Amino acid sequence: MSTPSAQTKSTTAFLAQATIAFGISFAALILGIAYLPLDIWQRGFLLMAMLFLVSSTFTLAKVIRDQHESSKVTHRIDEARMEKLMAEHDPFKIN
Image (cartoon, helix red, strand yellow):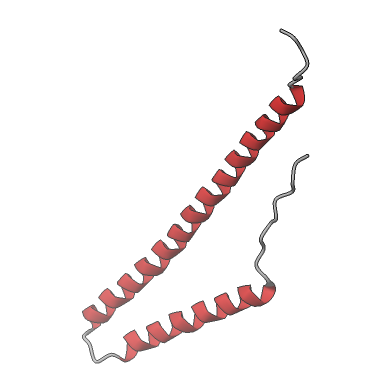
């Protein structure tokens, strides 16, 4: 009676592309900060801001993923309850 939910999974090529893009952009930003004509404290500020941005991006992605997964679990529990009620219901039974 239940329909299996399609599990979306990233391909290896997509994972590789995302990893390579992240690595290149991270390295380019580090090189850009290193070669800017700035004082050391200005470079330090930019480096700290970049590291904070990267870490908060990973945190945001994890929170969004966790919320999505919890909503899927809740939906499955609700679906299972409804299926149980429908299976137990007898329309011809007189109370």
